[in-house]
Amino acid sequence: MGAKGETLIVRANGSKELQVPILNLESVLVFGYKGVSPDAMHLCIENNVSLVFLTPTGQFKARVTGETKGNVYLRRTQYRYSDDKDKALLLAQRFTYAKIVNAKTSIQRTLRDHADKVNTEHLQSVIRELDRQVREVKSSTTLDQLRGVEGLAARHYFSAFSEQVLLNKHYFIFKGRVKRPPTDPVNALLSFLYTLLANDVTHALESVGLDAQVGFLHRDRSGRNSLALDVMEEFRVYLADRAALTLVNRNQLSSDDFFKKESGAVMLSDDARKMVLTEWQQRKRDEIRHPYLDEKIPIGLLPYAQAMLLARYMRGDLDDYPPFFWK
Image (tube, rainbow, N blue to C red; front, side, top):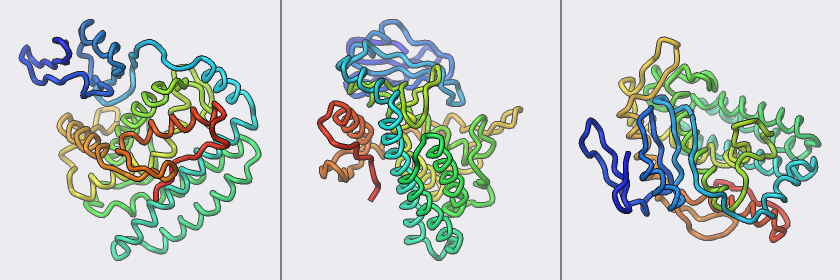
């Protein structure tokens, strides 16, 4: 990938495949081990466009951004909050609460729209369990206790995920979340979408001056964007999981779009990955009324809206952090 003027140029086998104005981009994902010219890297950095390098299968390798933006006092407040058990617990509860409520909403919508195609008894049972976990989130007194509640809620939620797959059930079999590596098409699709979401959330947090590596629910680990994983919890269901279900249930993906490696890992084909990326970007252009701001915004700006609200809370402009709830 190179640059000419204010545009990025993608070449394949010596010929130009794509030319995109830098102003149209918020981030660039580089799959595989192809290079990026110094001019292209400089153009991205100067325009606050992050460069994310991934393996051919979508595993994160590196991220290149420009100079750190934002107020140093905001980041110092973030570090103090992370070290304060009470403040860290409060924020972790907000992220987890929203995750579970949004998971419940997703299942309720499936029941409402497809009651004749699903096991309603099982889905209603999962909803009751998630209601119980919501109450347990509120009563959690330690981060370890809260993480236990979150893990249990995730298991209940994913136990109902296969019920929400309405087409090609014989192929899109899902028995539980498997991450490293994904061993079935549904997990492969979820992992890819989570990678895209993590990049968007990381970019949003850094754009408002927060440190994406210092989290509350997800604790510090070298090389991990823990705060991005925290804020992602609010969006996993609404942005990633529902996107996966839509692609499958609209018959946009089939067995031809996946392949299995010798290691047993299941991956998206190159063409399928391009299609998913296109659908992801199209979805981000749709509008939603933000439940707290009460304004219509593109779905793609949701991570930025939440990053802004989190920064305002840490600056003392808000009494509490309002997480995103899907309505």
